[in-house]
Length: 138
Image (cartoon, rainbow, N blue to C red; front, top):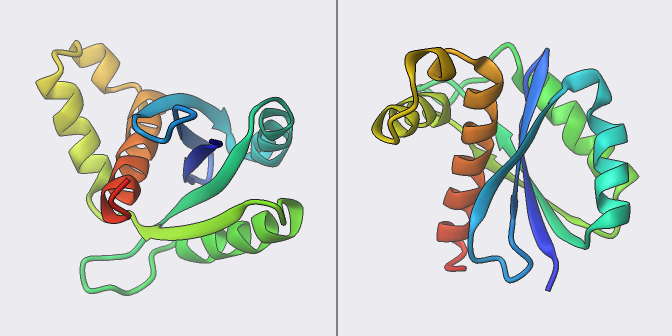
């Protein structure tokens, strides 16, 4: 089987997570500068079999778009063009940063590590991927 990759898009940094080849476990992969995201994905997908890409769609509590929603919508369009062999899925990412912080706290990460936004982005991508897997019953 091929992996599923998740993206927690940000204007500066983008968190990435990936499943194992059996699509059982979601793990943080990396946090990359957003301007290098497509290059990183092309290189990764050349090395690893990726079946699908899951993108977290930012929304406010009242389901209205955020400042980042338009950029994520544009990213989804680019992904569909650049990676036609992979399925592209969009999932609601509300609360992922808050859940990521709580997860890191519960996991015993030191305050300095919890304040590292790159770590928060990668953990958020992992939570997006895990929620996608759970919603699909994988």
